Length: 422
Image (cartoon, rainbow, N blue to C red; front, side, top):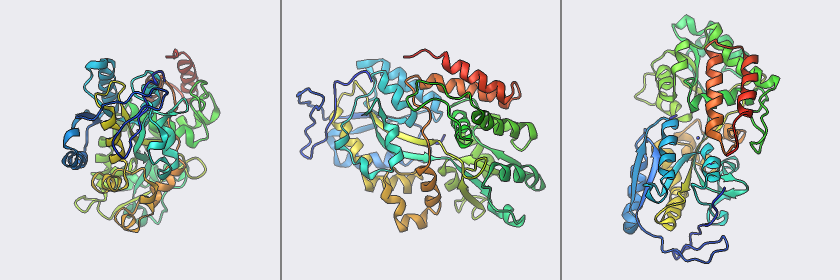
């Protein structure tokens, strides 16, 4: 994506004090002399907002200079490179990591990131659903940094010409995608359907919207073998079979799908809020032509997967105290405001969604907040990497016409059950 969304080690728990002293709260009284320069790893910053934020930190914290390392914009590639570094232990380069929300459980279970003290971060000021993405086994292992929810972008100019309301249900979406889009030389609907993390997100949203689940809340029981899960996968498969999802969408990631929509090739697009900002900008060919609504479901509003990223401290961070202080800075309300204004990334601070000035500047905020408050995390699992690989492979095969939705659900249940525990 751009949007660009995982305990064995518990030796260190960080606490940021006003005097700058960092103390362990895990039963160890060790005083850590841990202020100093940091290296922060993140997926590629496609909007260029992050470096200016870190430059602000560097100007006021000369002894704690942060060097930013940008990894690929592909979630899978970023995940692989972070794991390679974390496995290097003391030789690793990264002190602080901007991780997809669903990697928290995996990284924590592997002992790659440090537990953090809840009382040192303003978690009550965050949107309630986002905090759960930063926990594993009842402990805080990261701090929410940005959040995200999938939205449905649509060509409001075209729907207005046809006197059609924005879709509220899958049936509404299918009907307009199949019959209205071709009248304007357009494809009907797309999401992120290449077999990578984006497809896992799209598949999970379809399954959740239909009332199904993939794993239980603890990530220990496979629950995908249900009629609801089959209905969700069937929605995606049917779209390709009937043609209102173009076959080329099976190669789309976030940016490819956004570009197709912004070029005028799509009537509807499932994507993250950044795509709405880009497509509706004054410099865009679609300025004043883009609308946005929550994702539809079978009988009404659907369910978005909770996206975004969390900030975590490497288990081998050279200066863990400075890392915790940087997290406090990046999640402060003034900086979170800049995250939205400069990067078009949804902040985790709840108060910013009620700010009249921001609501005028970002008219989709109320829609986004409604989607965020009902959004659901992807399956929590210490083997999330394997879970995601199975989901994306099976669903892509089904959408490619290689197996039916019912066969896909049976295969999902079998292959997910065969993933060994970490």
